[in-house]
Length: 222
Image (cartoon, rainbow, N blue to C red; front, top):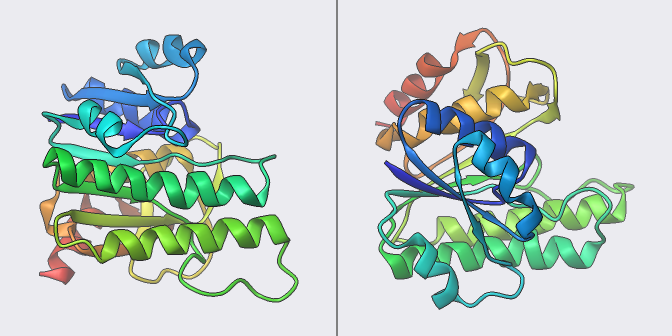
């Protein structure tokens, strides 16, 4: 497959690029800064410089032409204010979905966040609350699109511990941690399992091998 990943220099995206390239997929990562290109090349991905906060749908669709799938893994990141949660975590996700539809790319996978489906609890840090609201709004936009075979993945608290290959993947898992390695492995498996289209899934560490967990999610939906 040819897969285009928004947020191609992110910590999950770089892991995913390595996995996809290793299994023989053609991978392109959308990045904002040309200086990030070397890291993508080292991961086996083609760097595509395009600022999703500034680009038009036509600009982004051009980079998606000929792709079999698109993954939205971009984020404003830590240290950014509430305004950029809106322009990146919501706005760029909507733009990328618009561009995928314009380019005829149906398979669309979103890296979201656990907690994006409800109003943040009272007392939540205002910037983190803005992040969760932006993610929730982006998810709702994508789920309303008949032109996309979407899957939304909502990981728990992310860690940089080595992946275990063992997860819990379900519409509701309860809170928990999950390694970025395992998130990337699940994303790679989701891209090969069309039966997960139309699902919103939570992900935490668990005791089920990734391939089995993805197959079980697809079977439960079918």
